[in-house]
Image (cartoon, rainbow, N blue to C red; front, side, top):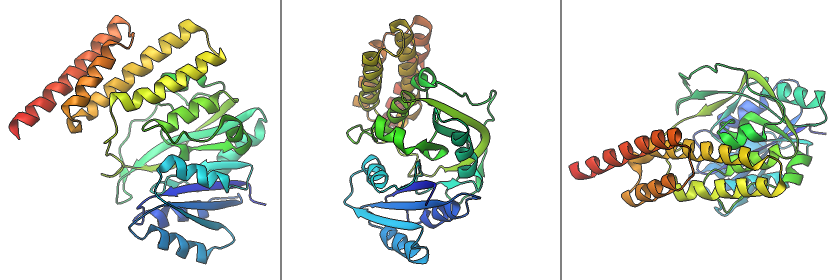
Length: 309
């Protein structure tokens, strides 16, 4: 019986899929199977996936569906997962050889733990390592609900091994959200139990032009996920109201700054909407001042670029 199912949602991932699958097959000391979900690709991804399945039919399963987005593709893969633990690995990333066995050992040590995660390194479209800042402190363990609510603690779900039973209880990815589906999912998972962390790198996260495009990165699209997540936690009364209010203000501030950094590619109407959300987000004075400064700078940059064009 397989110990882990690795779900790989794939959309036009032909340049990277083989390398991604090979990284799973190279996993040390663990029995893992792979479910590749082709999400209506048009570049030969499905044909490559079937070729890989033909080479390892006992390990790899391929499912094809009409294009419905990464959340639906992950959910389709999870519906076909047979192992007690699951990893959602994007089709352009690479697992480190000891990733799955390391994360599984953390789950095995604590029955109350519902997820184990590790650190992330970055590679480019040619699989070359990219520089990144080392962490100043170890990754946190335990009840991570407050930490996840406040910010992007986990870069990608491929860095996490989840108990399948906990995913069933929490519910799968929200297909209706246009942004932050991963983060909203982590929030629901954190309500199910504790997380265990290891401070070694478990995944190479690929950055390339396609992964860096953020056409749906607007204030409104991020606000959908934030409103849903904080509303659900508030209803469950898992944290005091004053703590939730502080976490929500900080999360909205960090989100607005992120959008501002990316805003050179956003139209003016989205920047205007972002400013409205910034002013109405109940931030404390210091955080509001910093966020507004960043956002206004982005607006200025966008307008100057438009004037020059």
